[in-house]
Each structure stands twice: as C-alpha cells, then as structure tokens.
Amino acid sequence: MYGFRVIVEGDYACFTRPEMKVERVSYDVPTPGAMEGLIKSVYWKPAISYVIDKIVVFNPIDFMNLRRNEVKDKLPLSAVRGQMKDPSKDIAIYADESRSQRSTLLLKNVRYGVEFHFEMTGIRSDKEDESEEKHYNILRRRLENGQHFRTPCLGCSEFPVSSLRLVDSFDMAQVSEEILAMGDVDLGYMLYKMRFSDGGIPINGNWDEPKFSDRAEAVFYRPHMIGGVIDVIKYAEGIVC
Image 1 (tube, rainbow, N blue to C red):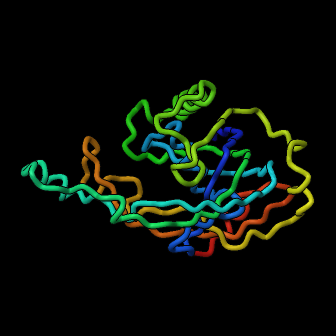
Image 2 (image 1 turned 90 degrees about the horizontal axis):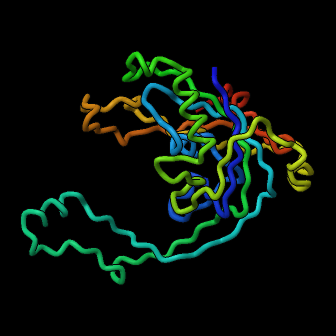
Image 3 (image 1 turned 30 degrees about the vertical axis):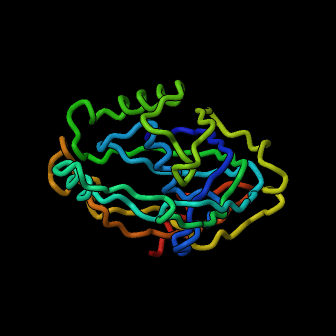
C-alpha cells in the first residue's frame, strides 16, 4: 500500500452540507469525498482509487458569509444542437432575466493535512496499469512538481487551492491553539462521499467516448476531531447509511 501526506491551503473553502437545499452552508471541516476529488485533480486513472486515511485541521475554523448574484438557468445541450442546425435561433441566457441572489456560508484561511493511499480497482487495467509502483511514481512526481490536469479546489470549484505540497510528516506543533483547546469534538453526521451507481465504468461500455451515470447515493459517517486530527479510517468503519 503506497501512502502520501500533503498540506493543502486556500483562502476560502466550502464543503457543502447536502441538507441545505437553497443556500450553500459549509461543514466545519472537509469531507473525505472533497479531499478525494482534490487528489484526483492531480492524477487519476480508472485502475486506482484513492482512500483518505486522516485529515488534520491546522487553522482555526473561521466562517464568513458571502452574498452574490448567480444565473439560475442552464443552457441545455439540445438548444445548442438546435442552433447548430439553425443559426438564427437565439439561445442566449440573459443575466437580467435569470439573476438569483444566493448566500454562501464558507470557511476562510484554511490549512489541512491530508494523509491518503490508493488501491487497485482492476478497472480498465492493462499490464502497465497493474503496477502499483508505476502509479506511485507518477503521483509522487506530479505532487513534487505541482502538476495537475485541472485546478484542485476546496469543495466548490470557485475556491481553488492556493498551495498543495507533499510532506514526509505533519508538524503537529503547527495546529492552532484554538483547535487544540476544542479537545474531542463530535462533528455529527457528515457526508463521507457520493457513491455513483456506475462504479466507475461507462454505462455505454465505450472508454473512448465514455458516458457515466449521474445517479449516486450519499454515504454518511460520524467522525470526531481530536486535537485537530480526524481519523477517517477509524470512523469510516462505522458508516451507517
């Protein structure tokens, strides 16, 4: 099993609570699914899956409220195809007619330590993909060089990571006094990750032009943060739904 430790920093983060249907409200700490998605932005292959082992919260948990205008409508693909056939069709979305004001309760000045490993899935694997050492070396090199194929984000895509670096160990002396003073914190039921029904395999069976399912179920767990450390593996064993 090949493991890694990284330090992640950002100006803002929002790990959205799914029970808040209209306004975005962040959890106090990251969800394992959000951290998994962040690592996938650096390197991803169907032959491997990432498992978050531990999350360390270094900075104080500091919220701020942001209110902004958003466009509530989406341009359907069918409309785009229709205009390709008939360029005279107007498919534009006018902001003045589709504007919606929404509020976001987000985190600011965040810094997390993420310990994780990857496991082989056997999906679309050839002889080269069956080598764990190959994936380890590629991921390590990309982390050391600061490479990624899409911008890593902290929950929502509009909150990009400002720093992502590989470390040998976490310096627990850097955990803030505010976090240490909280002691053992029951974080309540939190989203663990979204489990997609396709299992990572295209529903059309075509890897060249894959089509994946949008159907997914939410998986929850109930972790504790002790001295700033969330032992994800320990509490994931108690997943109840």
